[in-house]
Figure 1 (cartoon, rainbow over the protein chains, first blue to last red):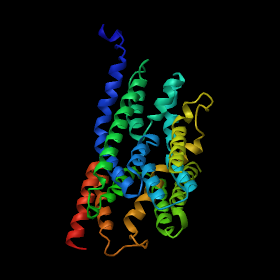
Figure 2: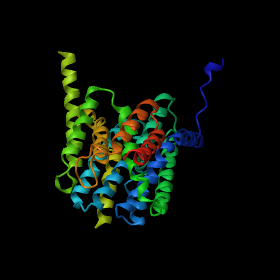
Figure 3: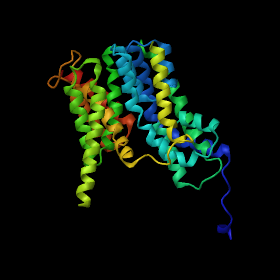
Length: 241
Length: 104
């Protein structure tokens, strides 16, 4: 009976290349974002080296955009750091969700795997971990997705930095940043609580413009999170009462 | 100074990714924290989108004569229909250029 023979265990290289293959289509969204970040970094007053290294030191698109904008606007360092931190807190969710599959690995594996844990790599690899049989080499899948994204992000950042100075201001390429985020946020609003988070953050961000040190970013973020959470809680209470 | 802040941001970001991989981490994040963290992307990204669309270079609210506003509405529609980042960026930028050229 063919059904009684267990499926062959995927090799390291099969897992790795499956990750690469599945991650590649997402680069259609990542590549323009990386290009625009490279352009924006230079336009905000960062040096080419700072812009390029930000992509490997922080390696988180939205937070890098905010870093460049805040630093370029002369915002004090603690506010820059706090804003970047709030934006990146979401990774703890990915870390928690993927940890059961990776926790038994030695530390020399867990450190680089954590570094590679971006939104897009997580989305692809958690799908494989949940839907395909566990295997001793399954962490190579995250190496594949993570490395693909990393390489694409570095190449497009460097390309953006190189061409940034030659792109005329009248092309309004900086507008690609909010457009990228619109593409992420608009389809993500599914529940009433999502809408509450979105509206609250948007209103605080618009009204808070006169506040010093661009502190509206962090206020809008915290306000939006609180509004979403409270609406969500309220919904649960209503449903259970 | 900027390097120090970059490295601090990098270390913190790494920590957010590593936190649940560590040996001392609890097995699970508390439920309330999971729920709250789920709203981080929407809140943060909206906080960046809204001023980039609505605020004039001088810092005031720009509604009339602001091509970015209708261009953003086009982009929201395209994002909802196609769910494609590339399609949203391309149509949003094209809309902005056309509106700038034709109307404003």
